Image 1: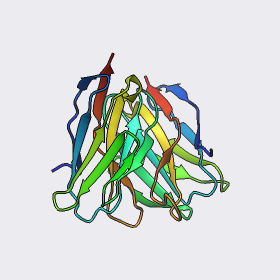
Image 2: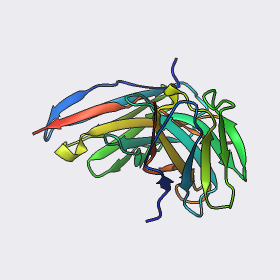
Image 3: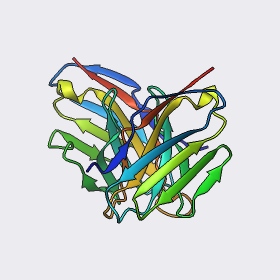
Image 4: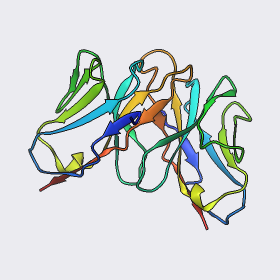
Amino acid sequence: EPEVTQTPSHQVTQMGQEVILRCVPISNHLYFYWYRQILGQKVEFLVSFYNNEISEKSEIFDDQFSVERPDGSNFTLKIRSTKLEDSAMYFCAGMPGQGDGANVLTFGAGSRLTVL
Amino acid sequence: RKEVEQDPGPFNVPEGATVAFNCTYSNSASQSFFWYRQDCRKEPKLLMSVYSSGNEDGRFTAQLNRASQYISLLIRDSKLSDSATYLCVVNGVGATNKLIFGTGTLLAVQP
């Protein structure tokens, strides 16, 4: 079964450092997302990406965050200058956008970010 | 009112019990509804979509009441392996079709 692959599984960084989280979505998906989940809290929407551009972003997704799909395969989330409160699990997800299960999100296993 | 609201639990039930989870959503224009399951420190995984007429998948039954903006999940004959957090998920309004997650209801099935 196709899956969403995320790297790294865990990253520890110092406050103020830049972090890039990587995702390889399922190849026939049209919509891509980043969600985050702070420990013990709910899964929160960060940003959606369609047709090689951001289609929607949440209040959390401020100027410190950016997303790219540089080569038509990888989908990255960059945090320019990490803060302590950025510590969370970051999930990449994709959605087919057509056909059976068009609106079903499939998640990667997540990248756990710890900011010290 | 929160976009998607769930009773956080925990629900502690014995094996074999029937347990029901409820969820309410605020946006009457929402069209897609799901239950996801999340194990501790893992990613959410689709349990089942929720259809207007209600639907069943084995021991799991989902119901939707659009008038009350209410979704339910019933688990019959609970197994130890059902222990997890159950997430009510509703699509937001807008071209991106983002999905909005409730806080989840924690289920612990006891032997």
